Amino acid sequence: MSVKELARAIEVPESTYREWEYGRGLRVPPFEKIASTLMISTTELLTGRSSDFQKLHEELENLEKELHRIRQNLSSII
Image 1 (tube, helix red, strand yellow):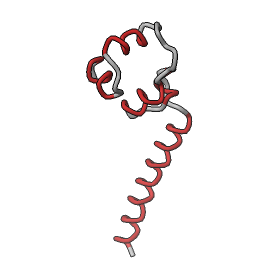
Image 2 (cartoon, helix red, strand yellow; image 1 turned 120 degrees about the vertical axis):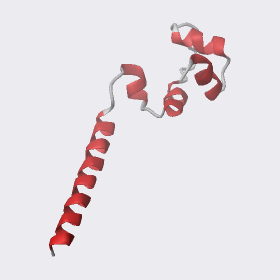
Image 3 (cartoon, helix red, strand yellow; image 1 turned 90 degrees about the vertical axis):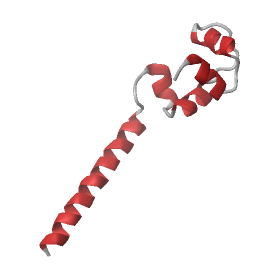
């Protein structure tokens, strides 16, 4: 996503967003709105790393897929 697109998505002027990006003019940090627009956590936005909750959620989804596959295999055997 370009700077222009992100600024438009969070409803701020592009110049304001660029100031934030350079660490200037951050009176009220827009982190939640930016993270939501990018569909990432605020932790990931600020640190570049996924949050532990996000990792656990991904692991749970993978386990659910595997369980579904196992159930399908079992139903074909029975």
